Length: 412
Image (cartoon, rainbow, N blue to C red; front, side, top):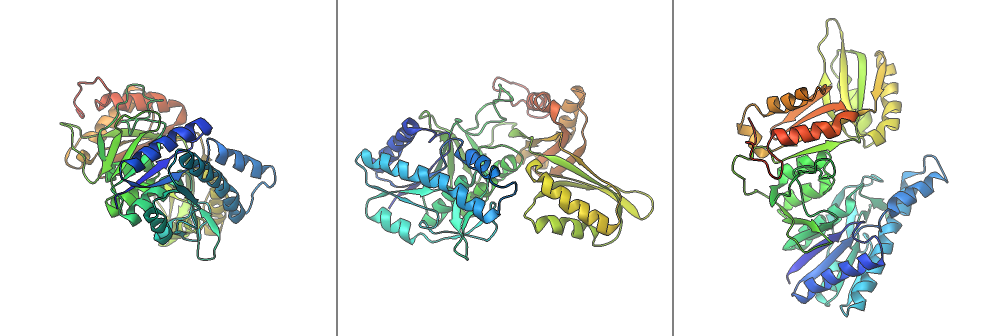
């Protein structure tokens, strides 16, 4: 049985006409001999609308009840898509995350998939049905509904593809593929024919919204090829796979930006063993991710600690860090939600010195100050003032010759 997993995002299923268009793609694939599993997101802005509705009831709704509420969006989509596929003469059945065997941990709103029991899905495929699965959701050991976080339908699709041994996981969205930068910010960005799992994971983690990072992790772990393509045309998109076909001289494969960022500065932190653990374990216990951690060196027995976190977690971060700082006897804690992160990514950076310097030069030429720098083998990230993001991205993109018509070497 040749299995194909297809995922359709919110923009692809925004209204009945778009749902019917996606159904035609599903049926066409089924008639080509594939056993098709289609994963769907909520219609359009449904998730945002449900969140807004919850805020009218309670300022801080219980996380469990939010998951129950938000999971309904995908259930509407799955039923409508199954109806659309059936109307085209192709038998179909819709399944919730629980019915599809998506088993997660107990963290509400940011659950991670632990296992996928494919028994029900395989049974339906073997009977000749297309299986429509509600993305973004699963079930935990307590039999409670959980959701996987923003973009979680990507993870549902890739996890199912891995568990089923699918030939390919197609991610249908409103863009033609993975670009060297966000085309809405950098109009000269160009589409990549392919990209490695490692590079895609970095770009996704650094703000590129085309794939959820956890989905890329699943794909890399299980060697699932992922085809990111548009649901509005039949053009080839971008293949995410183990190794990309390296373009000549292409050391930097893309640039990304993230405006969902805040900077936290703890002043006069006691410089003793275990202090960093107390701060970051308190955040981890609440499921809050941090990034770009910098500890300064000062005379005496105190130090300053700087890190970045997601802006939409800042209210909770403020409570946790302020309490920990007080207990530690640290100085004031400063919070800045006017920053953004710009980054470059490329596997070729490992063996090519001067890449970071070239990025810093591009920002300097635009008179853009850098607050914090973070590096790894295949990425460099800078925290800057948010007001400069567009100028910074265009300057960096041009500096590395990523523009569509550029003949500039990828690094000087």
